[in-house]
Length: 464
Image (tube, rainbow, N blue to C red):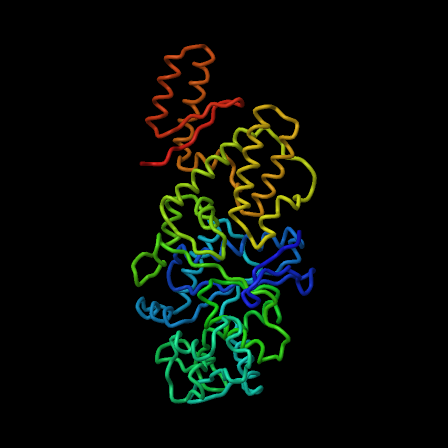
């Protein structure tokens, strides 16, 4: 089965055929680093991480180049730096480090490249110059604006007429615009803000041109896949497309456009204005990153995802079950043939159907548990298939013992291990009263003991 992806431009699933299978390229819009990112910001991170892992499986790790940018100059960054009285790099370095740490905790592989706008300024200025030369942009009162009338396909990605797009967007009204939809490529900086020299005067770039320049610099145009949240289709991706097509007269900008749906807090969209934002940084202090990742992938990526405490608790329970199976099968050596079978990848090959892939992981775990109990010969092959699919999904990457015992420090672990050993000795000597006493002591320590054919294991229970 070939990989099929839903292309926003085509409004249909299409067989994925890269321009060059020896160099598959993907770009995903990354963070603006002025604060910790909320959990909704990390939905595209884990969704496109699954696609990154899948592409590496299909084409080889060295064949896939994935760039995810960083916006590190912006009004909000400038305001934060002014508030704290520090350079913008103090803000951006701090929150980029936090963002990357949170992404890693959620199981996301580092992208191949993570370009920053401030480090791409020469390429941005050169690209704006080419747009001006091609009569696709014009200078006016210290600004440079893209001429939307120069691109006949403007609006094709979002599928909306130009008048409708203008009405539905926050369009800056300025006397120097030739058309209301024209957007800024370069603008003067305000007093005290960072600025760079350019042929049009000192200033800084607009948001849209940053991504187009970073894509061309890191990956080259056209790219195979461009991803991001559904909220970026217009104006950001529409504007990116227009710029990219006009600056170099390319045949295409991105062969496939992928967009993930919103993450909602229950029944309403997560929004800072509504005060219902949950920061991933805070959530990771309460739950393992893998449980949060499971919850983020629990709905198909193109559908809205309702974020609730119940969904997160169910995610933790699902992973507890899976790690419990692995713990009981820890004596089984995974083996069984090389590449992952196509029928196991089938859910992901069908436009990243992560819920179906997660259901298959659960089925393989059930089959493995049954095979272990029956000491069946196929147990090694089932474990191999389970671990291979889980790896593509970014799950079951921890040791089962670490998963269950992660809430205990080394001193507590040593005490619990000693009590478990004493309980085993009491049970071996048929001193059931002592064994029950020790179990009660373990329960008081918030420890759950799990007896199995390979011996007793334990886990820290969640705090009430």
